[in-house]
Image 1 (cartoon, rainbow, N blue to C red):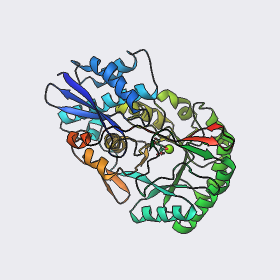
Image 2: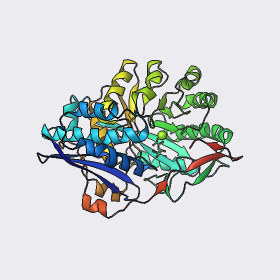
Image 3: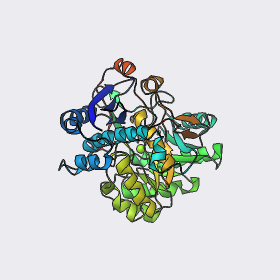
Image 4: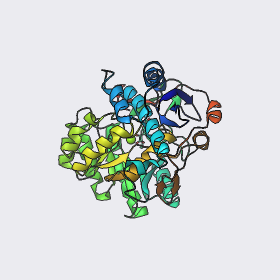
Length: 402
Ligand code: GCO
Ligand code: MG
């Protein structure tokens, strides 16, 4: 069996998505997501110029060998561009293998460990009252777990407060939007938000919050402590994690569960965090961390230390990543939760899929492969549009973490 053709499809049904399609000499094909928000074309070039020429003629059944070929063989390891490209190949090959086996991907991985996948949705509001209303809407839609982000008094353009009610998309057309950040105002406000949410919605709903890398370890420890009375499911990306040791200080001061890893690309980014039990949830996902093959290694390491998965599932990852992640979530023994931001109807039409939402859970469906396809006619209607994530500065103009 041979890979006969592989090509990259770029489409922008509201936001940019990069998809790799691999076709074999036996008529079976598979797709993988290669989207890297704001840097899409770098992955397109990496795939088209450097990866696809090496794939033609290879045996698509040799998933592990192809993974090692692209990772070790290239000499240049890791990094979001490399690992998104490898992930796209890997996801497409697992899709092909599962189709050949006539199985849903979760069966090929080892079978179902659960019947359904707990997801959390995003409730955002420009201020406290709007955020409370947004949480109420998610409760009404059946969500059991809800991430709450709110505008902060005295600050404009806070992370997580989107345009539109369900389809939060931070990237904007044109050059990066400049936003402002003020940590003391944020630290004072967030506990008042969760106090209100617990008062209104009680203890049953799981609440989450994303600090989006804005805090120092000490500030993160302060926030974790001040949120303890509200029993969060997790506090995400409390501080940047290039220095994995940074989490030790946070951990020593708070029992609020910690999640990190949506921008990690390999097991090396989280090895110390996991082995030292500095986190509770690892957020790596299919497209960002080298596909199913590598994600499985991260999850297995995590399981030794009772760290659970909580895959990134923002709308800048395509439905292909969502479908593959749901098969992974259905199998992985140490599953925690899956993020689920809804894609727009235009995006859903470009990527017909077998997964469905019901009463707070996602179901991967029982289609063979990962259950997501691309309608190329529909995709062709939406040409690429350059867009960037915003940037953040402190009030004195200092560049900060977005
Ligand atoms: C999340 C993420 C997103 C990112 C986005 C960047 O937790 O869902 O933090 O909101 O900001 O994926 O492209
Ligand atoms: Mg996040």
